[in-house]
Length: 171
Image (cartoon, rainbow, N blue to C red; front, side):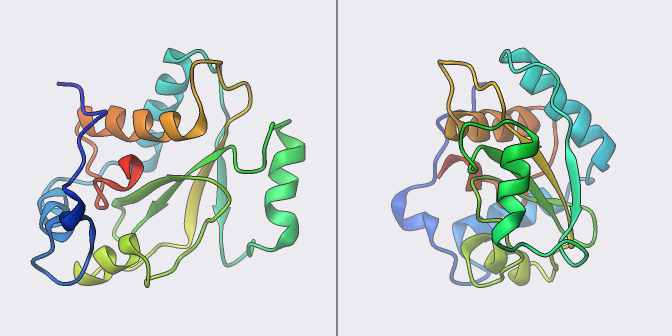
């Protein structure tokens, strides 16, 4: 089954309380066993190879030790020869080891006032400060960072990896 175009109805996109559609789906995801990060990285690398991006080395970042400031994205941009400083995929986890969100762009955060943060809070979870970033150099012509984000999220879901903010990579 191809999951590329699975979206909740517009009314179901908001996260208000325990009965919100995205929270109900997150609770189902939480019933599955979480995947260890080495498995996630291996799957991500396979996905990137499958779309012609070659080997991408992930960056493991602790957001307490390496706070996000003006130079944070610029360093990734320069060190990885990116076309745009937003050309990154980042994976954010909960303290209990679940993949919470798959996202792209230069807006990495540990906020709890956005949709994914509200979902995590309503589940009784907290964000882990350790994240994984994949710099997206050499994006093939037929792809862009949003399609890669959507494709990667759906690729992981198809392989049984629970994603607590199940729809974040498709919104």
